[in-house]
Amino acid sequence: AEFHALIEALSYMTHNQRKRLEFVVRTDSELVYEAWMRKKTVKTRHLKPLYQKVQALAAELNVKLEQVSGDSMKLVLGH
Image (cartoon, rainbow, N blue to C red; front, side):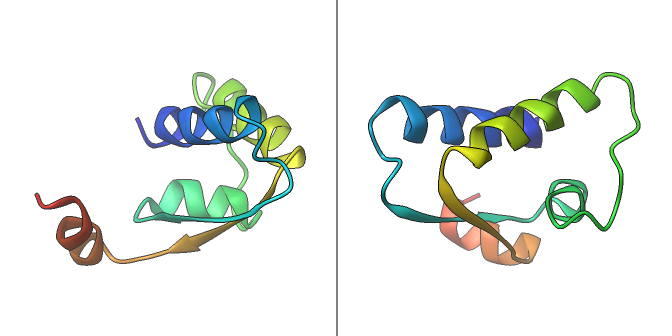
């Protein structure tokens, strides 16, 4: 689900002419963050194409990813 959410956000930014802006995406997903920072390799068969899509979309944008705690995300999202 985390990779799908990131793909949706990056797709929105790409398709809505947001390529020149700088974005910060915050995630509480350790897997997404560590894959993004290349601390871990995504090897799981069903996640690998999703990660490759994230990489392709991110290459078109000025975006960085920040890791936040799950508690912080709950405050932001309200659940």
